[in-house]
Image 1 (cartoon, rainbow, N blue to C red):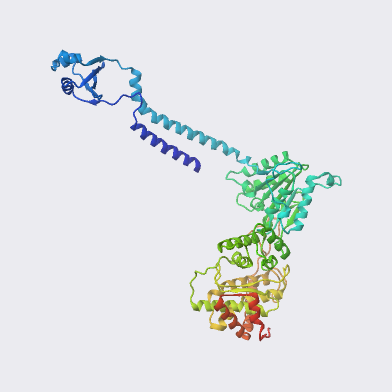
Image 2: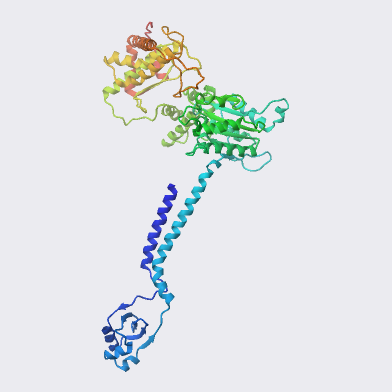
Length: 623
């Protein structure tokens, strides 16, 4: 409707301009407008010989034309003829002989058109514009009932032996890592290419493949690769595209999509962001009439209804499998669930090599070292990292991307850009230096803490400074000792501030929040508390609550248990702080050395930090 309103405004303004122009333009059939004069002035002009011709009409109007071409108009008086009137005014017969006098009867149509058209034309134009507006409104109204016709986009794939250009160029070669996921999907593609090979053994085609993984791990990219590898029609649509303001539109679109896919079977349907329509039913306020529930019901019927011999595979992607309806996940619908995890160091190296294509790199670039510094990065993060490095190189007017551009880009992706324009006092800078040095020193002396790769007191994003700690190897299991050492490292900045300045600042607020959240997980989720014991007291619902009526609900924790949890969390954090305080007190010279170095050059890399800590170690006894 916004587009229609804009068109109407433009047409209306056009009408106003045209009407204004028409009012100033004389039409071709209209004569030149004469000058109206009194009768005695006409007599004077005749006496002077300035009148060439006179035209008399039946209504007594006299139109004359002067010898100079100008038009005049007057009105006779009484019932006398024009000649009688002029003679009565003293005009002689010789003067009248010099003038061409003509009695002309004007056509009624000509007079009518001359009067009506200037008035009627703007109204005709306005009526035409209103009719055009009405036709467009009728077109939109008819499209209202065609909302269900949006059946997704089809990717046309190249057949064997065809010379037609392939529009989708993404293949499994462009997807680094996720080997198991690619093997699962290759089986599906092979089933579609050669179904007889499987059906002869009694195997049936998988009905659904659900890609599960955190954001940025490559679910949609993997679906694009399936489109590039498969030689069958591929339909893709987002879950949000099923939803509209009218109830029933989503279900209609599902039917339209599957009808279109069945006509092209065997084929693949890919639904991105399945959780937008696949959430557990009955959790909304609309009950059975909720639009999302109706759409989900239609998907369930289409995937595993009475028609079970249709070779249509449904692929879907989500990062919220916990909110999906159980009926979607049962056998017969999404038979296969392919989990995609964040890449390990080998996979990160392969992903970096993929995204390094097309970027000129210097010989000193070591992508393996970059992969070591990026644990927890997804494929999208690594792509962003290489893009930021290329942008950084262009800003420096260099022709090749080097490690000096890639490594700072890691911190930019993690924390944001540097804020060198931030004005801080010398005192705040000193506090920041000792705070970050405290994190680094405590981490250096704890055996289960991750090694320090970089320390900086240059503000990035919301952080006034940072200490970059990177594990030596990818970890999938974490021990109790690792968590407790990480808590002590988080308290290292606070302990250093209190030791050096006998005061604490708000700079440790983010560290305290992280430490408190981790301590709560240790006590209530991981069962690592000696006092509470091995029991899970909290569940990670990701903000989605409200189980089904037949599901057993968890009992509410008592006030006594809640108090024990709070006391244990406080005790864990206190022990971590005491551990950090012992290390800082025993290594105050090292703390001063690192802090002063930060004040001098603002940044310390891993090799320089380890050389500062290597001499004259004074390792404390940690209890």
